[in-house]
Length: 270
Image (cartoon, rainbow, N blue to C red; front, side):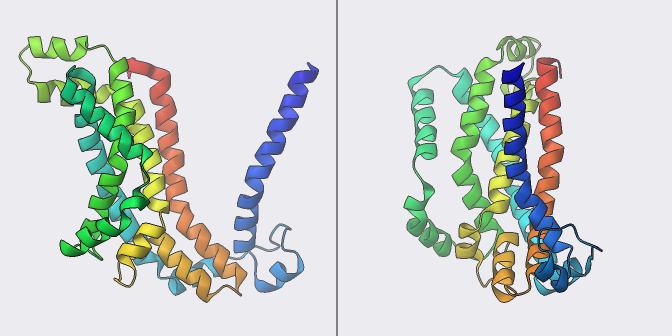
């Protein structure tokens, strides 16, 4: 009993440690300059939404949110399509070629992509894709594909092969068996792939700064960074801009997390 009580105390302390920065961020975004200077950690009294309106206009977050949404959504579609197909082949085909390709994908996870930033930059520039959505989508798809294939392969290997075999006996092709029988069973891992890749792509700062800086297609982190540097003395606007930039991906994360938990709970029956 005492051990359980101590464990609960530790868990509460850890939760408070994680939630305190979030509270500070939201509370300061709802305060005017006078409240921030006098009572920075107290609850807003009264709260104000003026900072959000000013931050939205000053940081031009509307176009940035659209750019981030297009790049993230298109990259996720490409990752799910390519990653699931590749993983199905690697998990089901027992050959030296399949094993070699799997090891190659694993190397893509181990090696940091920063090692190839210069050649990748030159390649994107040579293809005329610098400063475009297409260049960023291709980049993220290539960078995150090894990790996506790794997740899908492990999950598919745990699935019985009888499902696809039964569909093929009934006359379905390999493609039809995968898309209509196997892929619906991948819902739990697909949710995980969506969450992890979406968070990485949306929050990535260095790559968009390098590939999209000055193009007019900057993503949210780049726009918020420029905004923070410009309005660093006005903490209310700065924190409001940070909240607006993080809110969409937080909302998506919470929604997808619910579906992932539901998928794991239902198992293959879902």
